[in-house]
Image (cartoon, rainbow, N blue to C red; front, side):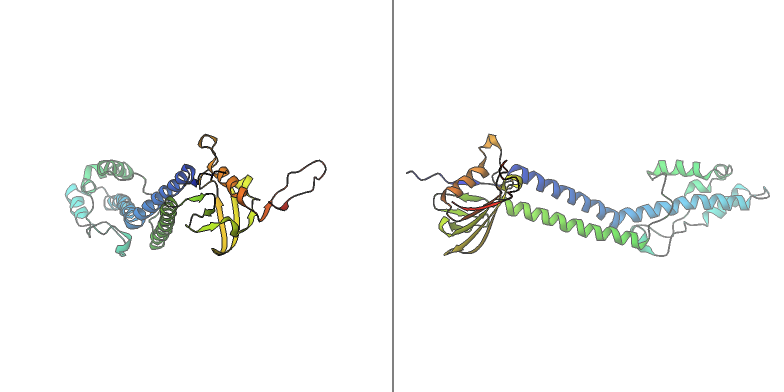
Length: 274
């Protein structure tokens, strides 16, 4: 009788695609939260306080010109002495922001301030400088910024875990020949050491578990057919062929669900020896 050719079950494209998607997803999330925590929210705070300055300037113009005697020169002098009212906590603002920041030049213009349409001035200013026209209803506090860092580290850990699993699995495979099975960890176990073959999840999830004990040691092999080999007909169903080869040399106890029949409708599982 000829010795059967070894069956080698490598990582499937399905697993690799899933691992890459997870790596990309967590990596993108980590990058987005890093941007928000390091500069994004601080930049948005800068825009928010600039936005408030336009409303503040309109209120001050209205107050100073209540009797209609405010001159362009007086307003320009007043505006030149004013600065944007940023919070004292510099951790809430971009590190490159130079303080104090004087009012934008557009707020120094008497004729443009006179209609008291500060929102129109803001739209013009924000469009010219590439700022968000709607900065929101409130600024981001230190707690919100800290939350971005927490989620960033969490997503980074998940991305690192996905990368580790991907690289580790790429180097692994499950093989079987006429004498033994070699697990994905590289442990070679002779068929004579195999004691129990659990196939109860093989048909539904592509999972099987083999308990072994003997000269090779004692432990359990986990065979994941969806990760190693796969069940595609066009590829020859490598995982199924692997299992058939193992069963052809297996002499221990097999656990599997028994098929339902008309005579035994309540039967759920069976235990047999090959």
